[in-house]
Length: 117
View 1 (cartoon, rainbow, N blue to C red):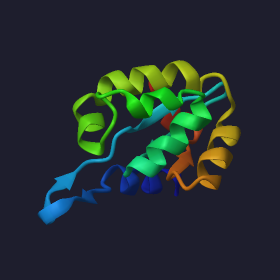
View 2 (view 1 turned 135 degrees about the vertical axis):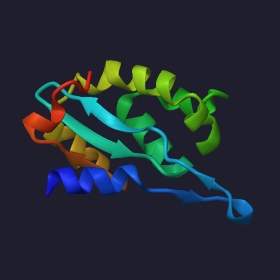
View 3 (view 1 turned 180 degrees about the horizontal axis):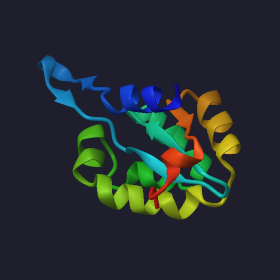
């Protein structure tokens, strides 16, 4: 079940003005202190919540990350920054906190988490 949820989440698309489509970013598997989890941020509000949880609200003002399209263009940089912080807490802590603020996420089974770093 966890694999299918992660797969579905990775296919999420966000409709913009006039039918344009932007892919979610960050949308990736992230390592935690004890495993890994998948998250898919599909709007500015979710990104602001993620930044607050990571302790980096200033990322919302960074031109590279200020919009969904900008985040997608700089997704590798953003994922690298996030990875530095996601390892500070356990998977269950991240999933509980992200779910509480409305950021789509799912814990991954150990086999699925291999190579996520």
